[in-house]
Structure formats: C-alpha cells, structure tokens
Image 1: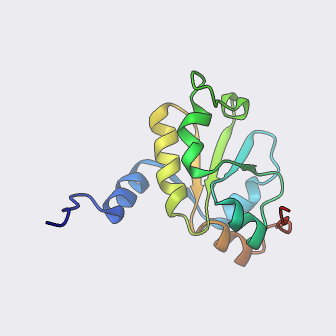
Image 2: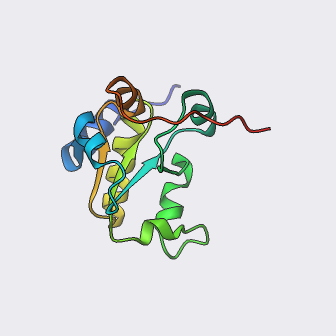
Length: 135
C-alpha cells in the first residue's frame, strides 16, 4: 500500500512563507556587501560550480543547516553566532524558504530569503562570480 502524504511540499512552503520575510530581488541586491548581513547559499556544490555564486556568500549545504546553526552541535559554524541578518537563497527559493523558517524556529533572527533565489538574482543583474571546478 503506498504512503499517504498528509502535508506536501506546497503546504510546507506556504506555512514557511507565512512566517518569514521574503525579499524581492532588488531589495536583496541592495543588501549585498553590507557588514550587518550574511548571505547563505544553500545550493549543492555542483550548482555552485555550474551556475556561479554570489560574492561573499557563505556556503551551507541544506543538509547541514540545523547542525551549523546550533552552538551545541559538534558541527557548529561561528558565522551563525553573529548578530547579523541572515539572507538565505537557493536556486529558485523553495529550499531557502524552508531553511529560513527552520532557522527562525531555532531562534536565529532576523532571517529572510530571496524570492526566486539565485536564478532571480542573476536575471536581475546581481553580482555573480564564476563557479570553481573542483579537481
């Protein structure tokens, strides 16, 4: 008998979006390089290699987010202990919406995510540096 999903990804995205700040791309671009803002790239390393990256963004694979945020985790990253605004992004804005909601639920504040993700950032002319091929 197949599994019955009671809350699909669309519901999860709607719930996340209702409680987090979603930044229009131009607003996110205006925040780039501010000392009080950390951009967090949740994309897979292969996406970064292929598509490029936002200069200065911290790369945090989506699967490590909760562990990197929690100061009690052996995987904690000090970047998440800073008193700054965290702007999450992925390719299209789905992973980043869920991630921003999770980060906010964990107590990280303030957080936001970029509507349309890295794709919208590039289309809007936001700064991009080329990806680096790993050997």
